[in-house]
Amino acid sequence: MNNRILQLIISFIVIIPIILSGCSSSEPSIQKSDSKTSSVVKNNEVHTNETTDPKTPSLSQTEVPPSKTGNKKLLPATIVKNVDGDTINVNLNGKIEKVRMLCVDTPETHHPRLGVQPFGPEASEYTKEILSVGTKVEIEPGIGDGRDKYGRLLAYIYVNGKMFNEMLLEKGLARVAYIYAPNTQYVDEFYAIQKKAQEKGVGIWSIENYAQEDGYNTENVKETEETGTNSKASSGNNYQNNPSDDQESNLDCKGKIKGNANSHIYHVPGGSFYDSTTDNIVWFCSEKEAQDEGYRKSKR
Figure 1: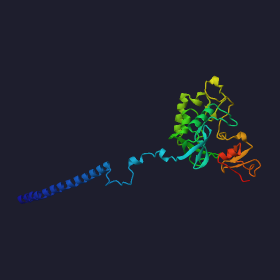
Figure 2: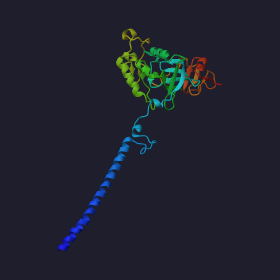
Figure 3: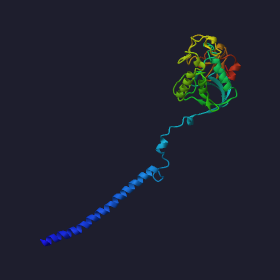
Figure 4: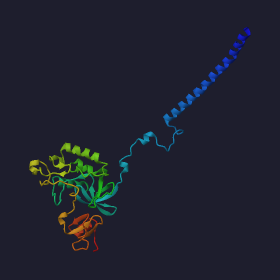
């Protein structure tokens, strides 16, 4: 019996160091693993070159939206003629282009049906002052086709780094209008500027119920003395603008020189294609006027 007890004691003496040795050897393994994990986390925090591919953008880079100004396609041009408050002629790459400013509409000054609308002359004079003949500007063409049915180039105009479309809205000389996709990138800014002009009651906003969503309503416009406005336009009938009305060509010369806005060819009465030209017509009072606009005479 004593021998059996003695054997058990000897066995415990032999086994216990082995157990203790196994426990102590496993601890460094765990610590080493923890240390490795900590090292990886630390590397992720500091984004070292050892763990990050320099060609792969970081999260902060991918979250930054693209700059709107960085996507602009600005073309240098020179003003050669002022047509109306929202329409100009420019020399663009050696070619005369009639440019209609996008997303804004000024009152008319010489429309054959609408006549002279309140603040139309003021808008026209302001455009002549800022965009005088010879002024260097930059053109940002509209997205897509870039032209209206009259062949005019649709664009935003920049002078001295500032968009002139916005300047018209600031002065209360234009309303936000003719918003068609895909040319909607500046609409929010335009409406914000227009709202400030409305609150100030400047320009077209000084006449109650004059500038409407669908055009300029002259029905309630009274004589200048009664309204207290400085507009040089007289009151007229209740006409409202729409895209088909928005043409500043000399339609009072209808029956004379007929131009095709697509081909930039003009036809004189009696010409072979005069009567057959029915689309995208632009009227001129003289051949010289057509030629000044960059049109060439039909050979027949």
